[in-house]
Image 1 (tube, rainbow, N blue to C red):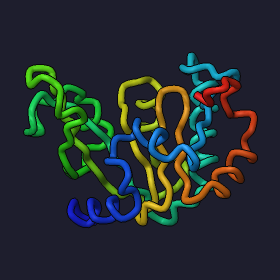
Image 2: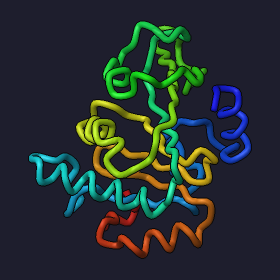
Image 3: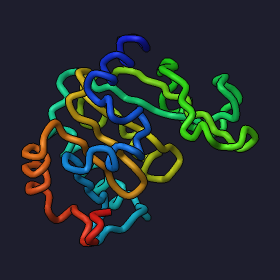
Image 4: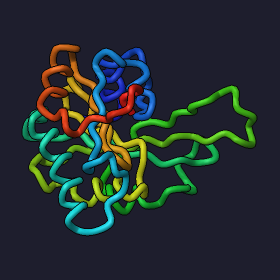
Amino acid sequence: MNPPALTELWEQRWSECPPFAHWLRGQYPDRWVRFHSLPGSKRYADNESEYGIVLDRHYTVLSELDPGAVLLVVTSEWTEGPPTTPQMWPRRSEVAPSAWHWQTLLEDPEEEPEYRAYTQLYAETIAWQPGAIDVLLRAVADDELANVILAPTDLRWLYHPYDGGADVILPSRKQRDALKAQHRDWLSQESSRL
């Protein structure tokens, strides 16, 4: 996979939304479900036992989604201009050092130039197995990394882990409902489903 091929595939599968992970649930609400990563909707792990729960929940859902042999990992950094340096979030390059630059996006082109932040998207494929992305998931859980998207290489579903859980966008409402039913205890109790 290379940047042009990934861009073309994204535009075929997810044309209603650029690859801003935090926009996905708003663009695909009928196929979206959010799972919380700790009991009682607790946001952050305080000890290794709780980190174990966080990782177990992520890997349980990802395994049920069945990414196949290879998982696509998209990570982000923010810069003050279109060039990819200097980085504002250097943790991304520590967690995903072999990722290649995919594209640069400007979230709000109407923003005053001095306040603009450019999103630098990086992608890599890794051999999938539970445990393969522990460092990345822990960095997300600790709010050291944001705007992460995990997907199979055909992009048939999208998994956006965040500090507190994960948003999953499935190919259909039926598939969303089936996955949601399997993990009712991990859902938000709020009417907003957040």
